[in-house]
Amino acid sequence: MLHTNLSVGENGHLYFANVDTVSLAEKYGTPLMLLDEDRIRARMRTYITAMEKHFGEGSKPLLASKALCFKGIYKIAADEGMCTDIVSPGELYTAKAGGFPMENAYFHGNNKTDVDIEFAIDSGIGYFIVDNREEFDKISSYSAEKGIKQKILVRLSPGIDPHTHAKISTGSVDSKFGTAIETGQAEEFIAYILNDKNTELCGYHCHVGSQIFESEPFCDAADIMMEFSAMIGKKYGFYAKTINLGGGFGVPYTEKDPKIDYEEKIAEVASHIKNASKKLGIDIPQILMEPGRSIVADSGMTLYTVGTVKSITGYKSYVSIDGGMPDNPRYALYNSEYTFLIANKANAEKDMTATIAGRCCESGDLLGENIPIQTPERGDILAVLVTGAYNYSMASNYNKLPRPPIVAIKGGEDRVVVRRETYEDLARLDV
Ligand SMILES: *Cc1c(COP(=O)(O)O)cnc(C)c1O
Image (cartoon, rainbow, N blue to C red):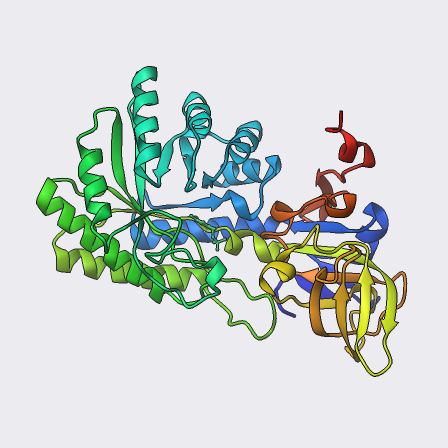
């Protein structure tokens, strides 16, 4: 099977984290999101251990909140010793409500408002990852008002194309994120910051993209950041203590995707950084990374109930389910590929090719096309694998569909960590 937390029981049912998915669908109803908590914790430990071992003490991963954000994930992250990055006041609020220590939180985003900045400083945010001068000025003036010295990193755009989908590539010069090294604007910005008394510059950040299976783009980014740090050090006497290489390691969604060993990739980046530091004659900085997808994606699964199965003579077959783009907009947004199977016939041959359609009044509401699948009937349970990242966090209530619950499985025990939305929830804001 695609991932080690998947198996088929003697009853022919799909098992996830050693639990029968068909019985979970019966117990909780569908659509249903499942999370393998043991696997999330194990993946966090892989990052923490590998980063400390290869980059040295003090180097650590930040959970990228945008991949999956609910109170309980912050309890897990805090338990395991992860830091976190947040990109909005809503994520900050959720982390805080989940008991996450704010000193280990980093505030991202290309357009933090004055209200956001005040809220974050009042909440005791550990670090801002500063995108631009306008927000820097506000951070500085509000820090002065509060009598604190706010720690910051500065987001740079290293000018790298990580060879992935354009919409999820963010490290190039022509981007809404960060300040470009190539144009000289980054140096100008750092010189400006170094004259400020209200903030403490700790180092630099970059993020090259997402769904990356090689260490090369990270090595290239590290080179550029280290060279920049050496140049600024020589000219202005400031050497970065911290370099944050962002997130982006990939996860296999289908059998076509490559497999990846995260520790091996981290070791490759680390050995590259060690060489660069020798060559440039600068110390190895503390390295941060911001994994999102590679922490939670393959720990998630979505279960739906099959409704209409429609074969249009001479055309395609459509398998319709009781969810769709509101709970998983990724196919509609990026044509993202997934693996599908009928959970109650998991051993049967995939003898049909179908388009998997959601229930919204929207032709683009699809989860996949040309999908090999066991011939389904109304009432069967359809499993979509690897939905832990950027599904729930991107979910909407389009067509007034309630968002599904999230059920976490730990040591073979299942429990609700986010309850199902009710119709009352849907109308709660209407006055
Ligand atoms: C999206 C994002 C991440 C997480 O990316 P993954 O591909 O999920 O690992 C980390 N850092 C920043 C700045 C991001 O925008």
